[in-house]
Length: 242
Ligand SMILES: N[C@@H](CCC(=O)N[C@@H](CS)C(=O)NCC(=O)O)C(=O)O
Image 1 (cartoon, rainbow, N blue to C red):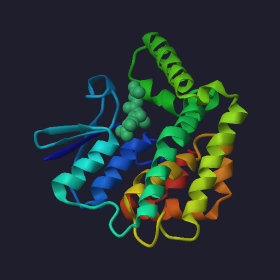
Image 2: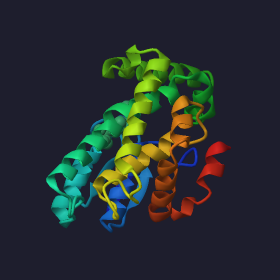
Image 3: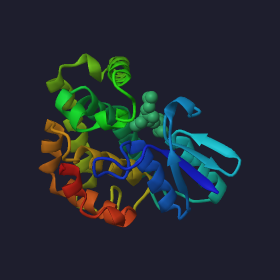
């Protein structure tokens, strides 16, 4: 029995968190069945989601989930790649996780209109007035995280400019290939897809969305990956815009 602890589908995306989407794609790519359960970060081994419980093992963090799949099930997420391509794959993955992710986090959580259109829904079950206190606390934690990471020290315009350069880089590496490094998906596509889908989510008004919408190859890539791994989410753009 394999259980992946995730946050669940929101905003027309397979999961509100790109890391949860990444973990689901890795399991699907390796042909492993799994069920999902709700992740409460306070109870998660590293206080973040996703995490995987595979028989008696608990694995937190998507890098370790990936290495666990490779070791336990012998699936090679980089099959057929050259050393140069493996290096590019790791660099793109970390660009998504350690840079673009934080720019998206800023745009969703700290821009009032976007917060109200999106993350506010996560707090709906908390009774008022406690809800307002929890929201204020969580948003100020996000602000502190962004300050610590570094992007939070920039103006919104500067932060978005850096985010857009990252999006440009994904588009440049992708070119006219079906997947990031060729004709077939590799491990890097899990996070690249999750990131591109998140940036293209029409629920959130940001220059990063406008920038990504000008990249025809990114839109086609998002649609191709969505059809492959989450065919049940057809009509994604309609839902996202609601
Ligand atoms: N390096 C981790 C990052 C996971 C992560 O940042 N998860 C976020 C959601 S996107 C989270 O659980 N945040 C909750 C919190 O910080 O309290 C991974 O690859 O799994």
